[in-house]
Length: 249
Ligand code: SF4
Image (cartoon, rainbow, N blue to C red; front, side, top):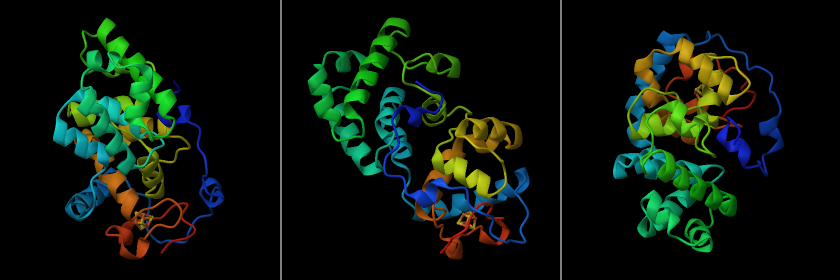
């Protein structure tokens, strides 16, 4: 699979406005440096209690099982949070280990994860991962990035999520929200999530790495939304340079 995990599942129905490169909104604020980002994250941490936590964070916290976090992340690609949560719960009620998943018939697995996006493809990916885990890792999810990336269907986003959420080790999981908001803040100036991860590893102190995804995903879903962010009720608006934002509410 490609480095960007989502790329394996073609994007459909993206609004035209979300695709073009917007002009810059006039703002007096300067681009964030590490200190400004740290202060913004502190504010978001305080506000986060009133937002819904991302489904994968909830799953990791509730289940404390790296295998479930890994499979949950595969299910979540190109899929709504609520659909992921229901499908994951259904699957794990039937099979909660690589061995148990491999004991399921292909059709049974597809049925268990339906209607997540690309459920047939994902059923094949999940079986491949389970086979790999049994054959090469004694049925356990590896803790190291280089080992996780050898699993077919696991890209950097998924690997970083498993490392940070399941093992609570430093990593930077960059999804569409982290990529977009880091660029709006001017913390990075990048074109792809992979570039964003590499840039954030340079500029952001390690103490922020684990919580970054969790905070920015929830923030991106509720306030700093893709096409027209809610800047008027954003807790970090006063300092935000809003780079690339052409329309806001
Ligand atoms: S909502 Fe607006 S002000 Fe807040 S972080 Fe996003 S772009 Fe900046």
